[in-house]
Amino acid sequence: MDAVAYPDSAVIEFVNSSLIPLRIQADDPDLAPRFKVKWTPNLLILELDGSEQYRTLGFYPPGELIASLLLGMGKAFFNRPDRPAACDCFGRIIRELPDSSLAPEAIYLNGVSNYIESHDVSHLIGIYDRLVADYPDSPWVMRADPYRLLKGPT
Amino acid sequence: MIVKAIGWITSFEEGLSRAKVENKLVFLDFFNPN
Image 1 (cartoon, rainbow over the protein chains, first blue to last red):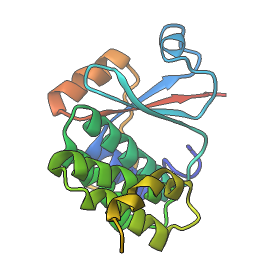
Image 2 (cartoon, rainbow over the protein chains, first blue to last red):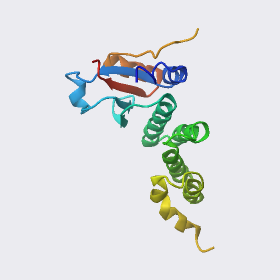
Image 3 (cartoon, rainbow over the protein chains, first blue to last red):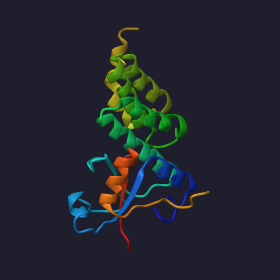
């Protein structure tokens, strides 16, 4: 991460403006056991009270790291629940980083967030349609498959 | 001014304090220093 992702200007700008960046050694005698750290890189998004909202393991190139952080932020906002803020994060992945491996998950969570807010099933149907159209090989198509049944007979 | 590095905080307590003051989520990186 220090060699490629963290020196990237877009990553620096995104992290410094959007998050509180906190770096702890993986062998910290208090925090490593508390967060069950067994491997690095081990990247987490925490709420203001320190509770874990998202975690991912392994190395990321710059664009994918930003997508992963946006996904984690979106999940944290979703859990509050602050779904408009969550949709803002998921929407940025969908619009600005459509080639990210995380874009299909963002489409799924964005549609779910909009459905919870509106109770409009078109948001669930939209998840399925968008995934089938743009990411047909994604495993998220399988997770959205029941939503195609909401279309009713054609 | 162009910021050329991530402004890492290395104290957990300070990180949470800053998060509350700035109303931002925390990005926590557990890293291997070796």
